Length: 317
Length: 242
Image 1 (cartoon, chains in turn cyan, brown):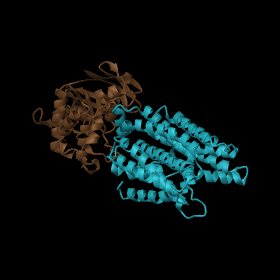
Image 2 (cartoon, each protein chain N blue to C red):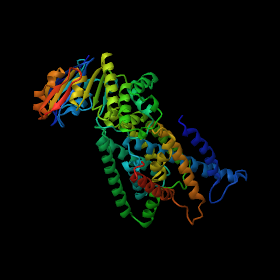
Image 3 (tube, chains in turn brown, purple):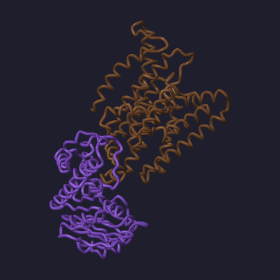
Image 4 (cartoon, helix red, strand yellow):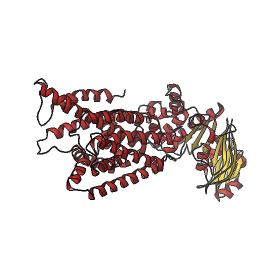
């Protein structure tokens, strides 16, 4: 265990019960059977899903920043989240979202398609530059097709549903989403963790990493699969949630020895904590309708990103 | 043990290179800018696949050796240092143990001590000077205890005392049986400290042999286009450029 892990686990142990109580209506868990129902069937799955979503995005962000050796890298840049979003939008467009499983399944198919494209273009060489360009191309293509789907939406209701879904939220999610996403995110974080030693070697540049025995193709496959499973599963159940993968590794990095391998698990835990806290916050904000989680995190993330850029301009990053 | 290049060609960079490098020797690769020195080192390290020809490690083609096994045998230090994250010195040197799958403290401590870095082991790499960083990166190579050390300009960022200390350590490694191949721009360092010099010019081997022969003033005149003469005794020669 690295140093931040026990601290983050302790913070989660405090945050989870608090988030169960928090909401537009604060629930007293001992007030009767209704309270138990609200906690067990509404708030607990939502809290667990927030943990899963945050863990996936935080872990993927740490791995991506390690792979690209760039503290401004975000897993959303590489086409998997836009691919998943395209799959989900297609399900909404064709009206297939009536089943709780169909929309996330379509999103997972979209994420799988994006992963396959990435692997097809960049998998043979294993080169980082090619992978980045392939990711940007996939992201751009999926984004364009999603925009096309919105502009050609069959009716105003479908368009509104698509736009709302794209903004990302944990509203009205339950145990089915947890059971769908949790194993995939866990497997994905496991694969990313397995890439840790190779990511450490990349600290010294691609040539040195290869001279140390790093297999670039194996690393690329671990990252495509790991990021695909985590970000794909997260997007499938929660929509697009940005900035978590960018912000969290930054917050955690100073607490570690900065080796990418030592950042993945703490980033997953810190991501879980951040999304749980943000989701609790959007629930208690006194607004007419609940603020979408994706919007709230973007509102938090944009100034953070600006701060990073300013820090980078001063040469302090 | 040998590291051999057989009829190597890399597009626009190397042409028809034949070399037989021997363990227990320090070989210096010299040549003007763009001669193909760094490319040759990377091909010998198995990092660039040649368009033609092969590199053989103990008569076995390098391309057929598993990456980890190759990494245990050949340590490579690039010309341009790159450290993406501000990791502590000891952790960075431990990366050298990656091909062995361990972080054994013995070789790591020995490498730190050899390069006078023990007192800096806990420091973050971004707080180091250029020379200290260069020593840390070389310590990472030594920590792997490779049978071949391939280093591209390892002395460029070092002060005089640390240059001599490093050359002393590389000599000790060669005496212990390692093959040492250094790209050097300083011809006097090559003349005084190498056992053998390979001179590259335009991607071809222009001279290869004992230092006195390969760095003869006629070779220097032909390859570098400058008049030069050596003065001093063997082992303490200085180059006078005329």
